[in-house]
Image 1 (cartoon, helix red, strand yellow):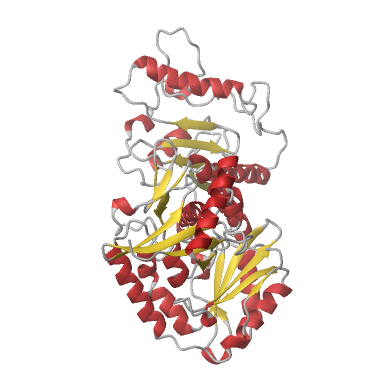
Image 2 (spheres, helix red, strand yellow; image 1 turned 135 degrees about the vertical axis):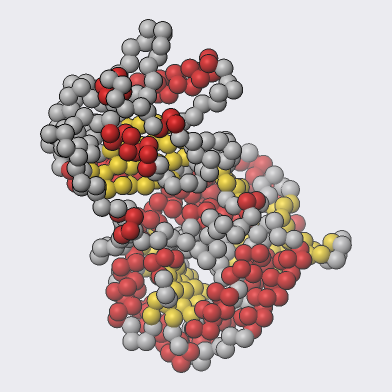
Length: 85
Length: 438
């Protein structure tokens, strides 16, 4: 898998330090693959990255983050959602 | 319950409220007004199944119509009907026999199309059908296309024919002579809110059409909402409808956002609302649900009820300014909207955002009477044209069922269109804004 770029998703009411979701973009087989993290900790397809760059819908912001930051965010979500059920 | 002495207008309003409530449940509703009164028809379209229909009038008469499968057993059919009757008899809205209606309706207990033969079950009977005068036309009709006209004229006419002579909705006068036909209100109706490629666009493949599964799950272009989430979206869309200002006949008075925007437009020195503003002011309900579904997928750390409150373009407007007046015009229209009592929540200037291909300024406002957000976009003629021209490409970009090749081509198309848009002077002077705490 080629290098992966991660994005924190920040919807209204959230901040970059408290994002509401996580997306990633990578190349696979020559094609760009965009995914977002689901509540069951799986990754699924998303249009959020392309809409953020090319769409008129500015409801949510995306912020590029490092893999380290993404891993931390994943762990934070895992712990939080695991407690919430 | 029919309140004795309640005015005719108030009953029509009550019926309109019922229509709003049924709409929020996912039914397609239509109010039909005549000189005799108002009728409501509400239809639940189920993919792969025959429609379920509710017909109600101002006097409280309510008809529930559905088809049971002839391949199911008779016990199953009875069980279905029994469950409906159980709900009705336990309901607090069932009218008692002692309750007066607006006018005496002698011998009228509602229309029943069949007697229960041999079961010993006594039910209310339609006296004209009992007299064998008029066959029940409704049962003879079948709708092959679930998206045929909302009111089947023959069904409604047959029901009207069965009413007693002194019923206000009867097509006959008290002396038995026929009343003149009511005016056809359809010729006075405004077109329904529509996108440039409405989900109901016949050019779209059936797989691209929004649909509701048998269990109430909503789906479109790879996105889904559970029945509960779909209801949340319907309720939010109803709030948008309430605040936008159109009535059940798609006509406007003085109240609501669209009339307010028109008053603001009249104040502007240079700017104007885009053509067909009323047509596009309300976001299509299925597009609202699609956006909601995307937010749920991408923001798993936020409750869905909170996400739906953050949808800012259920009601939206676009003002156009020529390039030379654009930057001052953004502030002019913003000041006018604020002066009208709306609260600025956020302003995003995509012209100065290098991460954006889209060009324009999107401003989110709060309307406090119903409590919704609405969006105002400000464009130059060229940026508006680019947005309109790139709409199809945008649809491909934001659809999960687009192939990577399709999405890549759509992205290129968008980039090409917006790259040709001149940047208006002084647009960099317009800062982004976000209300503190929002």
